[in-house]
Structures are given as structure tokens and as C-alpha cells.
Length: 350
Length: 273
Image (cartoon, one colour):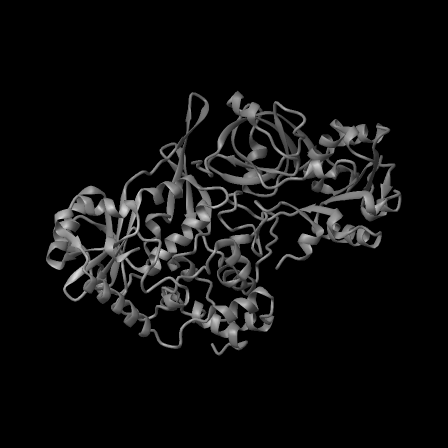
């Protein structure tokens, strides 16, 4: 992305631009939720959009991969089964999404569109514009810098906004992003050399602000990929896991699901619903046999999927974007940095 | 772009009981063109829906050389299989597939083939067996060894008689426990291996059955000089999507539904779990 194609907009003009975006598509942005926490939700007014916020505990994953995603309507007509695929083709703008969450979408797009592409997911991706708000300073638990998933993005966004001192600096990452500027072109002007320099200085400063106690994937990846993590370590760590599945639900890159029919109006809706590899029944077979009954086997599974070289080769990235949500949600302290550190050191302190 | 998880409607054409809890269903897509287009490899599987109850994977038990309908053989074990057994001829189910890699029939050409099945492990091999027998000239010697707990638990009893009588097939069956009227072999499947002459270097062995049987049979085959790549089996895991997305069936980084369910013993031994 060359600086010449970046534009800037005055802060006082944001309202007009965002207002026009609200009228053009379903606009989803961080808003002020109950208790003062930020929350991604549909907004109808630019006044509801937050520009300064701690990233919401729930990632915006649910808007592309709904927790309950209706796929097909099943009914009976004249003695025969009728199947009507449910197509969601609403146009979304995910606005002020943080770099880690955009990186999460990039990862999900890979797993859902590689090999056999999933129509439902691909359609939502095609209909969604990702407007990212770069992080001028690290958030309280983030370690995106270790996963190449932030604080600023080089790819994956349609627009990336950086808050400069006076104006907002907007980089265009795609034609979809450019289209969001077209309707309000009078509000934007090309970025100056000075503004580009300021944006890069902000990124450099943000990168310097990450502490040394971040998440060292390389060494953990070597150990977990070559089966050099002692079983006793998994035993000790999994002892702290409460099997709540919280880590998987707030994780921007977790996508395990089940398919279930639900009764509606004399027929059924077949839904894709979120599931978690951390639940005991995830691998339970009809015979009663369960290959991952043991909690430590399930914990191994989670980190093998996210950190192993085998999956890195398959997915082109670690299954972590460093958002730090698992740190906030885990009651047992078996979050990503803690487990990576334990694997690296061969020791769990709990 | 395909909606991977949306099934097509198929009709139960016929059904027949194999054992007290196992039944073979003959299925045909409601759309004749879809049925005409439907092609598969033996060893691939279908995701079958009993609407309102759920979806589960079942191996294609018929041969792609016999078109017009497909067959699956299902033991009553859980919610979907219970509901499927309660359906009647003419009832409609959902089908998706074929899923999975299946057996590489082309690569087996010219080889001697040894099929070893235990109990409900015969259906995944039956499609391949009929594929081979329908194109008999392409393959070397064909040996089929089959065992079950009791004579009642043997599936495809009519077809066993056909295999027994064919001159171009060597067939032996055994049961763990005889019942009145049984005059055949008694003992676990490995006893049948004692009865056949094998040339491990030119033979491909297809092994399918309960885990404990697979374990002993494969040990036996390796001792007889079979290379790990020449021993081929199919794996089972609980599945939801069948298309390599939902992660239920993963073993290490492999999807049983997509990278399998057919694996060589070497692949199985090297798996990360």
C-alpha cells in the first residue's frame, strides 16, 4: 500500500462519513455496552460508534460465523420433504475492527475457502467490508505483535484507519474499501508526506510499547510439533482447565462447529452451531467410545491445532492473533501465552 | 459456490435385515439426474440425514460399478441410526457426498488383493470387493477373510455364498462362538490367515473391523512380511460436516473425513495421536 493512495479526513467530518455508511449497509461497530464494556453491535447512528475503547470481549466473529447459523429450511409438502437453502446476503460493514480481529477473519477465510470452499462463509466474506482501526498503543492483554497480527496491518483490511493528532489517516486495501470512500469523496483529501510519516511513527511507537513478556511461539512450535512436550506437563496444565469452552468462544480463530436440526413451524431448520474441542462430548462416538475423553488430550488438541508446525503449514499462520481474550476469559490461567510459556520452559507454575 | 452442508433428498428404495440390529438400505436420489451424475470410489462415505434427528456418516457399501442406487449397511447404535431403522421403504432422507478419499482402485490393479473384515467392518470393503469382482480381469488373486462374534452377526450372508462358490475368489469365514447349525470355522479372524497362502510383496491387504481385531490382524500381517504401505485400513471418528471444516474427526492435523477415511498402516502409525 503506497502512501500516495492513502487519504485523510478531519475528525469533525467522521460523523458525516459514518452516517452515510450507516445508510448503505448493515453497520457493525464497537459501541458502549452494559457496564461500560465495549460491544460489537449494529449501529444506526455515527454517534454510537466508539473510537477509543478496549477491544470487546466478544470478537466480531459472530457476524461472519453466527453462533447459530441457519443453513436450510426443512419442511414437508404433499408427503415429500422440501429443502430450501437459507441464503444470507446482507451487506455488512465491520467498522473500527481491531487489527487482531481482522487477522482472525483472514485466518477463518483461509480455513473456510481452502480445499472445499464453504458457500455460506464465502458469501458473507464477499458481502462484508472490513474497516480496521489500527492500535496506537497495545491493549491490556494483547500480544498481536508475536503473531504478525497487529498492532497495524499490512494486509487483510479493506480500509485501515489510523488516528493521527489532527486527522484520521485512511489506507485503502481493496476495491471494496475504496468504494466506501467514493460516496463521500469531498470529505477526504490525499495524505501528505508529513501525515504518512506521522502514521509510520505512530506504528513504530506502538510496536515499541509491547513488553518483553509476550508470547514466544517459535520455541513452543518446535516442541509441540516434534512431540517433545512431556505428558506430565499436559497433565499439570489441564488440571487447571475448567472445561468451560470460554477460550474457544472468544477466540477469533476458533471455528469448530456442529450441525443440528431445530424444530420450527412444523418443520426444522438445520443450523451450523458453534462447538468446542474442549468439551468432552466433542469426540464422543455413538458406541460410547471417546478418543479424547481425557481433559489433557483435549488441551493438547487445542494447542496442537493452534501452534504446531503441521497446522502452520496447512493454514499458513498460527491459530492465534494475539488478541489476549483467552487471558481475560480463562478462570484457570491456561491461556495462550501461559501455555506457550510453559511448553517453552517445560514447566507449569499454575 | 456450493453450500457444503445442504443435503439432497433421497428415497429409501428397499431395505433388508442383515442381523437383528443391522440393516442394509438401498437409496436413490429423488432427482434422477443427480442419481445419474453420482459417482464415487469404494471406501468413500455419505452424510445421511434423518430430518429433524440429525446427520451421520455411513460408508458406501455398494460398488460404483452398479449404478442406479447406492447401499449403506447400518447398525442401530445411536439417535440417527435408531431413527433410520424406524423409517420405511419410500421414506425420504437427506444425503451429502460422496465424502472422503476412498480406496485407490487404479493403484490396486495387477495386485493380489486380501480383504480381512470383522463384524460390521465388512460394509466398507464390500463396495471395493464388488468393484474388483465386476472388473475381475484387472486384478490378481482375490482372498476374502471374514469373521464375526457369532453366525448371527455375519452380514451379507447371501453374498458370502456367492464368494464361496466363485472359483476366482478364495473365501473363508469364522465366528468367535458357534451357534447350532454352524459347521464352519470357529476362532478369531487371525486363524483364517493360517489357511491362506500369501505373497506379501505383491499383495495389498485391506483390513476393516473393530479396533482390537485390526490391531491383531495388522500385527500378524507385518510378521508375515507385509510392508506397512501395503496394509490399508479405514478409520472412524464422530463427524459433523464430513468436508474438512468442523474439526470433530481430526487426528493430529489430518481430517479423517477429508484426508481419509482410507489410510495405509504407515500413515496410521505416524499419526500424532
